Length: 169
Image (tube, rainbow, N blue to C red; front, side, top):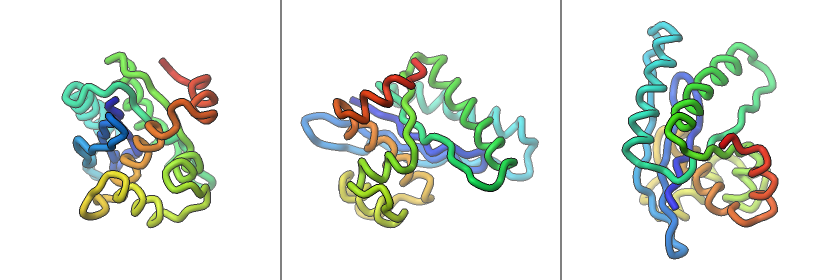
């Protein structure tokens, strides 16, 4: 099973591709799509969409796992991230990739076993599960790998049954 994990954003979109076979996790690639902050916002969305489309074509994932949006304060940021997230979901949908969403709490719980884990704990567990020498940078990339791991680990669990009901595909 190949899972593309996505940490959505409009400045930086973290991505990580994880293969799970024979009870072994293997990172196939990870990185970030970074937009130019001085560019027009619509151009930034187009850049994200085009790069996401190419990434999906290249890695041919069996599923895409995306972090659900959760903002308490800044509505403008939330709206911009939601728009970026929309073009990411569109790229996957147009290529027939099933999309699954996870909250930060779900990712922390599944990856570390503790829903209130701090970011460094999630990153370290992600590094260990994938046998990486160091935590990937930027943080958005490590988050995307954790989201992919969450999807893989949640398969067949009660969490998976709940998530599947809200699935896009």
